[in-house]
Image 1: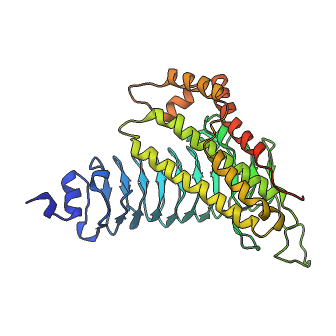
Image 2: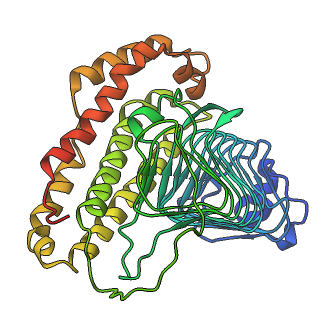
Image 3: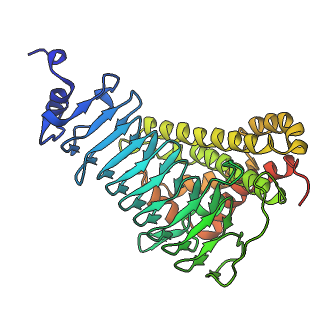
Amino acid sequence: MNQKSLSKVEQLINKGVKIPNPDTIEIGESVSLDRISGKGTVIHSGSKIFGSSTLILDNVKIGYENPVTVSNCYLGPGAKLKGGFFHQAVFLKNTSAGSGAQVREGTIVEEEASIAHTVGLKQTILFPFVTLGSLINFCDCLMSGGTEKKDHSEVGSSFIHFNYTPNQDKATPSLLGDVPHGVMLNRKPVFLGGQGGLVGPCRLTFGTVTAAGTICRKDELREGRLIFGGLEKSGNIPYSAASYKIIKRPVLNNIIYIANLIALMRWYDNVRSLFITDNFPLDLLQGMKATLSLGISERIKRLREFSEKIPDLNAKWPEVEKQFHELENTRGDERLMDNFIKSLEYHIDTSDKDYIKTIKSIPDDEKESGTAWLQSIVDQILEEIQWWEGK
């Protein structure tokens, strides 16, 4: 029989994809079967795959616990999506998501990071090894920290990132760790205790621990701090949702967050690109960059909406937005970048080009030039964009 006359499910089976119950599977018309590996891939009952961008590499397991819908996602080798809905997201090598997940656009889950059951993510970036427990809403966050699976940043079960204000804006991204240090995989993990919360936009540095049940509302930029809280204070005071008494902190935290995303894009451009192999093909890197670009655009959009409610900020926004777009291509201190790239290339094992193994093998003193290079990108953006006023 002509291959073209077979259904898409039948063609996948012929490629080697294991589909135990073919009659329950739906493959969208726009899905390119050339972008789905037949090596070790399993698609369980009730699952649906849509989107021309969808990329599924070797040994991906889909729908083991419950049916899965995948729409325009990029799934690296060994990724396991056990149940839920996944749209315009990236899962790199050996990542996993439990059943009941809802993972939406702008989400990047890097190597060996995982989320347990019933987790909601959107515009979320998890660096390698980061682990999220169950029953969590963690949209609009970037989380780094940790050095390996046994030393990872973690979010406890029933945690929520509060990312929508009474003023009905979402200029609320929170930065846990950062990009310049976090990509080096040599910093202390961040731990957010279960049944707690974080009020965005917030910044917590490496080594921060929040106790179970704590709602964190303030930045903490000192390493090695334990944050705990309860119900010692209560009150009932006049309040107007339309008032903006504090402007500088949310604006500054948004700019720092966007600057970190731009620094991460340079990392993808100049570092991740050196690790292209069959296990990390160019299509997967391009998916990461496209997803990260969505995140940058989302944060600029949300900051624009925030500024529209504050006349002094809004009057200056057009020039600020122009600056953001110009600075999206900034490369930082190229001397530092060149020094780090040379060191990195020396440590790459060309026989396998394993990203995690390579980054961990670089001596800390050599990593310093890479961190300084990425920090120079963040600093340049902070120096050039300063339009907030008031407190």
